[in-house]
Image 1 (cartoon, rainbow, N blue to C red):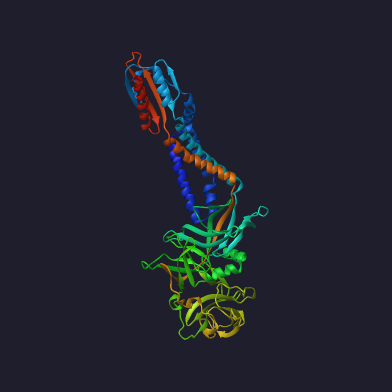
Image 2: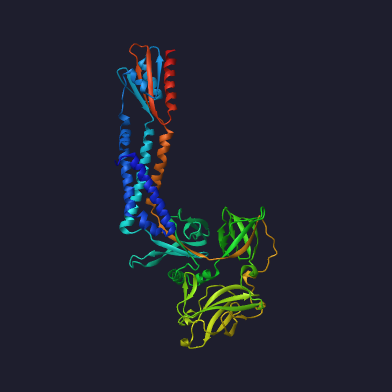
Length: 579
């Protein structure tokens, strides 16, 4: 049963289905989960082993016959047997055994004879095509079984992760610490990685990603750099290193507290800046057709790919843009900014210039899956939600904490910062959520460092700050650049999107292992080329003892038309010789 072709086909189908399941598990969770439940599991290893055994058993007879072909010399002395051959012909006239042997040796190969019969063959190499293919498949299965079994017994190789935020650079990654199980240690790389862009594509109407891709730039330290995509299905192999897209985290309300603390502890202010600023949502328009392209996100100084094209987009300062094909600029111009009047739904018509609004007070602040929240009404960790306004339109929001150890925390890059100074009534026991309360804050201009006290604010109140001229204009009302766009595209900021961290699995690859799998794949491709590119011909001849005729025929594997041509050449030689 194990040698059955039907069983082999069924096992191959099961392997394909299991691989699809592994891909779905990896897209829904992560690579480690897919390896644990599918690729490195005992049932998957057993499935590969059964497939290998079936392949060995099913092809043993073919392999054995192929090995015996050079010594196989079957001679036919019965003229009736030529009727069953694939190609046969009769050459009338007096039979000449010597000339027949010479013609067969010239066009076919060495001749063996017995009685009136002769046999010759050529192209035995063609019969090795199937064997070569099977050896390649067996090597691939054997390598997969060895790697999966090693990972199952000793744990998955690697386990190292490179977590990097959009726009950040890294020359190190986190690897498991063998001396402290469950903990990681920093490992340096001899090059630098910069994450330019991360994109996730979700199944319709779900939060399940079906594909996610990172665009990274590698700096080997010799003054050069190169861009590379890394997606969940195709790993990046570069100079003995392998990067696989393993996981990601969006910096929005879905980010869990553990990951927030992990990123904050690892990158500190860079994480807070990325968390607060997010990414610009870019709307590119083709001026030739007037059609807008699919929107994508970008940030100043970062080069990203434009969807559904081979072009790249970058904005050096958030005010100008360039569209590039390779290193050639095909379009450039001012990056139109989103206006405050259209970007936000809230407004305050009575405020002139800059103002601050107190949106909410959280007595015991926490961050939930749906946003800011409070645990109870006791003021154990008070925090203010506030919004900066310019000419009545919101510019951005942030949090201000009362506790001294949290007062320096910032989640946005606004031109002012707000410090939570005092609240009244001062007795915590007297205050309950919903009761009247007044708040004192200090607003500091970032550029000038000038500090202003605002006392007695209430929830929902808008308090004017300074004249608009004292603060830089916000991004939402950036100056209009008069330089016209050049090229077939214009670009505008359509809004803001949350930024992301990309989780890349990092491995140092064994050169010997790579050569083994490359050789396996080469044999797998070489087999069909040998099987279909060459012809194995077996030719029999019989000389009528009466001298009236010569029978010649044969069988072929591969290109059968080649056999008919060879028999015609043999017949032509015999005819010409008699002439």
